[in-house]
Length: 143
Image 1 (cartoon, helix red, strand yellow):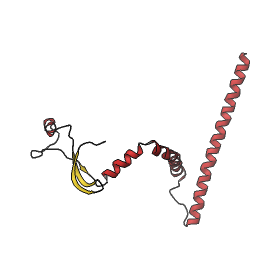
Image 2 (cartoon, rainbow, N blue to C red; image 1 turned 90 degrees about the vertical axis):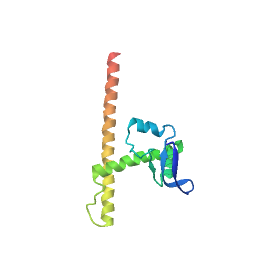
Image 3 (tube, rainbow, N blue to C red; image 1 turned 90 degrees about the horizontal axis):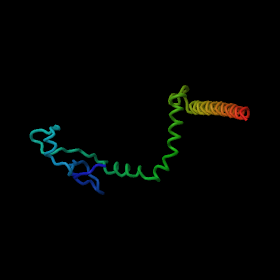
Image 4 (cartoon, one colour; image 1 turned 45 degrees about the horizontal axis):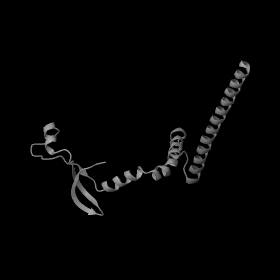
């Protein structure tokens, strides 16, 4: 979080159109002593704050709440699936012209993705069954 004194013209409802922020914990002299880019005539460092800074800070605070994180849980899965469809199946590029044909293409892309996932799951389940039966056979032989 950015702390300091903000100077600027008030825009309304606690927002600034733009302004500069001074860090009250570190005096200007320390910047000059460190030689960190202050000009001869500069007395302090300043940071320009955009007009949406207050809204951005409020949104970042909201993102830290538990309720926000619960709402965003589903988005992770959706974003992963979307990425898989775009990168692996070419969802972003239409092969045909016309809305009906593009819709059909997208349905086929989704079906292909689902079939690949189903086959992968079936292969995994069979591998688990084989390893499970091998483990049972080993414990029976040891007994």
